[in-house]
Image (cartoon, rainbow, N blue to C red):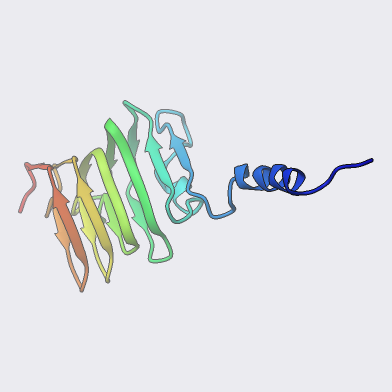
Length: 157
């Protein structure tokens, strides 16, 4: 005689509950010390809720643009990664996306080290912001930012 019932159903249901959901946040990494690896190359691969960890000690020589189509991501420098903007006619990190968090990074160079523009919304926390041609952090054109526990130094304005 074959037994079926609640215990078989519960075991099957348990298997489904342990599977990651399609919309689940992920942590991804980038090591800018490896040729061809950049934060910008990872931006479009991120989904809402994702965290991009920039490997400790990485120096990313790039100007990063986070477009309006990107939302609810975190870029985490783990306390020792640097983004150095080589083009001083653009922001080192330009944000038009929503709910973008920058944390644990040193951000240098660029016209503005961080520019939140055209309705962008960002949190900048625990970063060192320095050496920009204009502003360390600029919040423009209907944008908003929460700026907390940062060192902002040696910017022109």
